Image 1 (cartoon, chains in turn purple, red):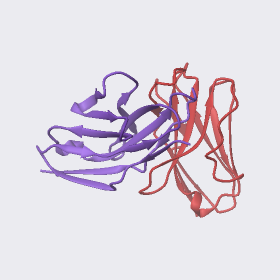
Image 2: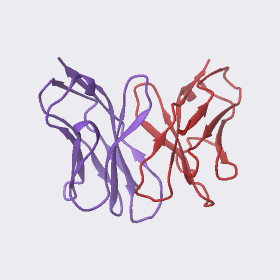
Image 3: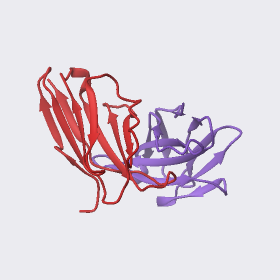
Length: 115
Length: 114
């Protein structure tokens, strides 16, 4: 069975500082991994995905994430946080080897960026 | 519009009543998903449909919940005999046919059971 863990309910950073939002996953096969963001009063939006190849994936709004197979992690990062990055972030996993479409999300991490 | 459309945007119902929530996916998307987001909680997988395959219903929390997808397009999520704990935002998403594709989400239906 697939599962995703986001160990932090909330992450607080100062504007201009680097940010990391953690995600670990569990699948029986190999994963497709995704990050989505939910801004206040707006729908969920796709940020980036890992499919195969380069472990460092770059996405929208300057975000990036690094796939680490040995640690089964896919942490979201940004070198310099903006106040406008404050939102709810979700990590998601799909099992590539089963060929199915079932996509499981984590509990979400709320990011607060202080000016 | 070209996005995922959900209706109604808000639904208030009395405990014990049945409700139907509707989702119109993006045209041409073969996969359709339902999730539930409770206040302050993550996204709970409910069900997904892919093409003509049997749906994966493994996330439905009880037999009061059911969903169908007609003609490979529009989907309806039905909750029978609603309970207060069913109050949540119900989100629909669709995606193209490849398993490495991202999901496109609708704005959700806020369900309140009084």
